[in-house]
Length: 294
Image 1 (cartoon, helix red, strand yellow):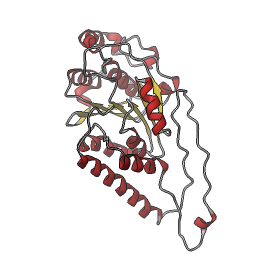
Image 2 (image 1 turned 60 degrees about the vertical axis):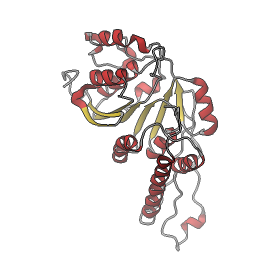
Image 3 (image 1 turned 180 degrees about the vertical axis):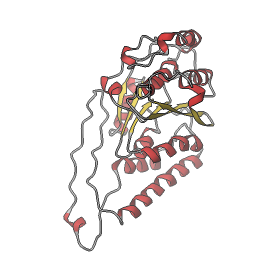
Image 4 (image 1 turned 45 degrees about the vertical axis):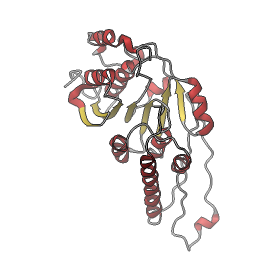
């Protein structure tokens, strides 16, 4: 998730225009609909219970008969506009890659959105899911501290991975065993690939979207995304009902390519754009007996 190099200034300008278009749409929409009370934002925390900001009241000026409605720009969108207008660092995903998940968010938000990784694009995902819950899982505790200082409204949790990229081939073999094809709560799975150390809240929530863009996976001693990809698929299958959209970034790399095809399944692949793949995985609890891959 962390940008290693600055992308072109064109991408930054396009992103700013994108947010301004959202702002314009909100302003136009608000003139034809009654105002709604503001939704509290969640603050970044290492606990499973993010604190809620107190709701502000609408001023008497807003209720004037001369004004049909009065609503403020959402806090998440305002923060995103300020952030991208004042930083020289742009998201690591390209505009076309971002658009893949943005299109799904446009139809599903507000929703529950789980992101593996915390980075310069995190505020953008929170803004696009305004009114929903967007949670980030990050391997680097010091990086969480840095982001918290600059973007305190984000909700993130520190997680620990016990795998290495150089173990990928062995983990793939283990993943073919029957215990890894059984659908269950990841906390109770017998599969070695299942991640069991998240806060309980992460397992209890029914996620509508899951983005796998972490942990680090570009060198042999990095944790790699083997377990993250497997666990994302297991969470989607273990959902009580409905479907989960799962996105995997950096599929130009061997691990992301092989593990996403094996555990999210080519039969559930809906789209690939550049280095990102979009899978749509149904609930297995709603229809027991499905094969692990169609």
